[in-house]
Image (cartoon, rainbow, N blue to C red; front, side):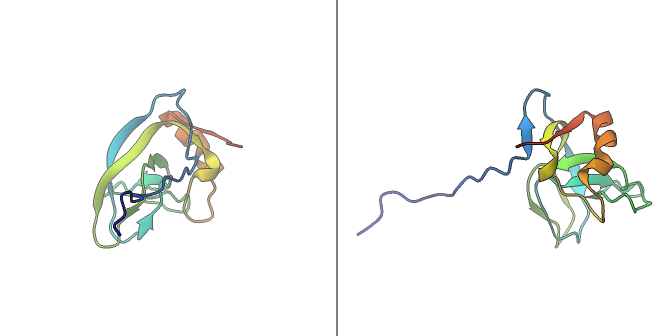
Length: 123
């Protein structure tokens, strides 16, 4: 017997978005090759010399120590550089963000606020 209905997928809410009281603006970023799979909600910094986006890390000294945007979806950079969409403004759940090194979202919060990205705690 054949199946009339198939489950196409399952939507899981990651609670990255806090609310929509601040408009979401997106931009295109070029993700540097070789970072593996970057998760939705990764805070990105831009390497000054190449203009490529990498996971923000305050221990870096190449420009990527400053937060620039938040990755909109999970994307694999293993095999090559990828151009993709990132959030340039909006309100986000700080507990759903990913940052590099020993950093926390709070370490980059004031820089993100300057850019129009606001962090809140979602319960």
